[in-house]
Image 1: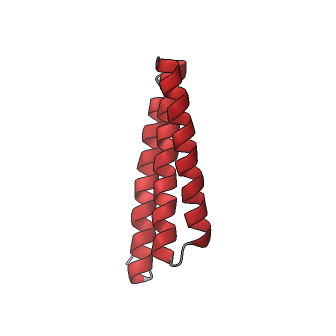
Image 2: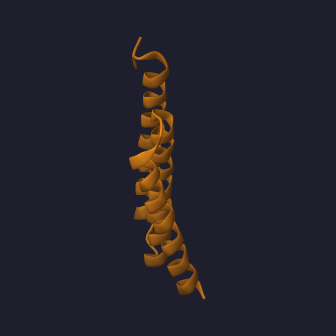
Image 3: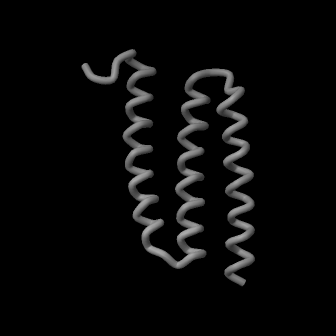
Length: 89
């Protein structure tokens, strides 16, 4: 049962990732593209966590935490750049 749930989750997350890639490519505005990129890294984190569950390794969870931290900081930096035009005042 767990193997079929993991396979279904991989498939749905991959579809979500591809749809976000589409939005990133044709987003009508810059904030839409930033939001699509943010959602893509969240989906990537979910894929890494599901793969960690599948192979039963804690190393992938630590990697997902590092990617989440880097993604959060980069999203804040890009949002600050869009609103003010400068990252560091």
